[in-house]
Amino acid sequence: MAGKEELYDEGLDLAFDENYEGAIEKYEAALEIDPGYTDALHALAMAHAETGNLDAAIEVGKKLCEIAPDDILAHTSLSTFYMNANMIPEAEAESAKARMLDWKRQLKEGGDA
Image (cartoon, rainbow, N blue to C red; front, side, top):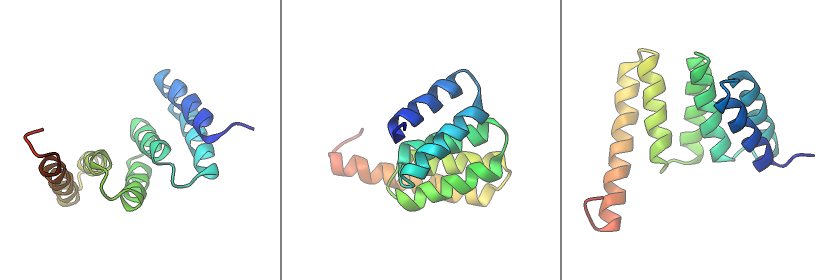
C-alpha cells in the first residue's frame, strides 16, 4: 500500500501533466492516511482551483488555515480563491492575515526579509 508521501508525489506528477482530477484522487488518498498532511491540503486546494471548482478550493483552503494558522501561503492561497470567486471582503481579510504573518516572521528574523 502506498504511503502518504508516495500518493502526494503521484498527485504532483499528475498535476504537472494537467491531470487535475487524477491528482485530486491521489491527494485525497494521502489525506485519508493523514488528514493533517498540509502539503497534500495545499496541493488539493490548488488542484480544485485549477479545475474551476472554487467552492472546493475554498473549503480545503479554510481547513488548511485551521490546521496551520501561521502558514502564510495557506492564507495567500485562500485569499486568491476568494478573489477568483468574487468574494472580495473575504479575500481582503485573508490577504491581511497573510501580510500580518509575514511581518511577524520578518520581525522574528530581525530584518527586512
